[in-house]
Length: 347
Image (cartoon, rainbow, N blue to C red; front, side):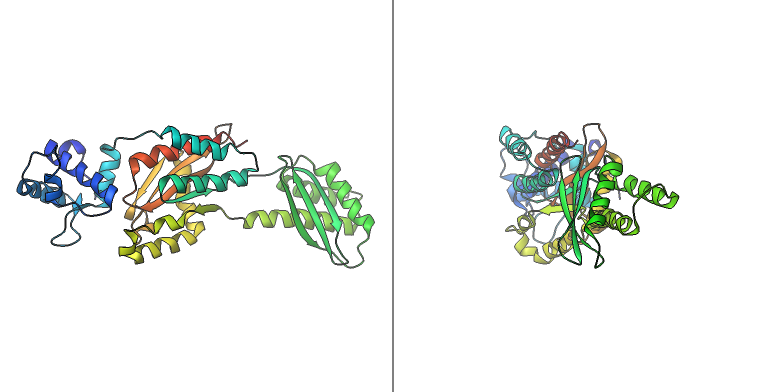
């Protein structure tokens, strides 16, 4: 069901609807006619307000959780508010400074991603999420060092300065000369190439007999590259921080919904697939409640924005997830600003 255009609502219905949504976002509680009548800008009796509320409910924009309770916006109503009525507030100087300070600290990109997720969580009061960019690191150096008779350590250095160590099983009796030969080959032939390119070149040279490597050294090179590639494929695709923020005072009255949401967040692959929809659109996306099946049961909203490298290419997505009563007007520009700030760090 599509929400009616804003201009189809009367000015009175539009004002009442906006106040219900804003009060609900602020308090997390249904809003009653007496509460609205007490506001100075409302010049209507409680009876007239109830009539407007009933009209908005018949349009599917509001719902009453209990017979005697006030009204709260439906997912359809929130979509109408976000798309047609919301007044976006720019991040405050304090929020901008907090984001830039966290991301401006020196360190590897993985650390910046962790900080991005954490600062989004802190500032939004929800859970922060960052998709790890898919990168093809280029080798600068790889050396293989014996640890004992059966194990060696493959030390891999990327051109971006990132260093990783991998344990490598070796055959008993593998000589030091084979370890050194494998290291020399990698330095001479594979430096500056991605793992895929390095593996392809190595296979072609071995198959054509163009390499002087002995069998032991060839095997070491093959397994050294493979163990790095395999580990990279297993890395988490999503960093989530701030799940504890989901357990606010209102959550305690609906603990099952929050438990469902936290369970959903554990399924990081599915969450990443949802965020990929923002990546494909290359623009900010807002998913409200049942609009996405993944979070339909938990009644949660996701605000996500792609971030780009210095070439302008979309390399990942970041955002926040929380209850549908997220402060969209504040969080949307905050997510957008964070995405642009993170993008400046991505080479």
